[in-house]
Length: 171
Image: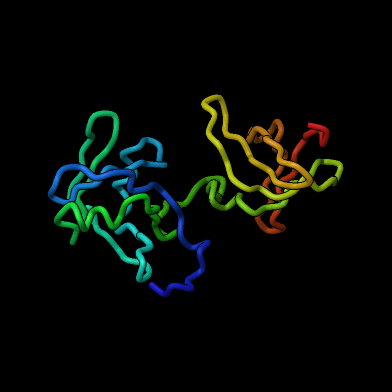
């Protein structure tokens, strides 16, 4: 994969979080729901010191509270150690189409403005809180706005790159 490929075309879905055993198995943190969905996407793209590499998952299983996987070409602990703390990415086209037409990754970087047209900044990231997801908006200061379509979030307009929120700028 070309190192200057458009980063927007890659979506982070997890991370190599640890080593497991001596035969190259790795512990993985999954950003998918349910967690095992991480393994439905293959190959994984991992940015190594010499650029992007593809890794196919040969096998995986739950282990304690986490997940472990064996990747093609990773046969010992040293090879596995080179993957530690690296993000697991996939190509955007590996994702299924969504009814509402976007993923979290699409919302990062969008402008956020109130229904009155006041600009609050840009979406820096999203957080899961359990009750609902939260937009982390960076502007004159950081704001946390619940991502509740139909309530706080009035409109997500991918064309114009903005999210309209019903939100008091004082908060």
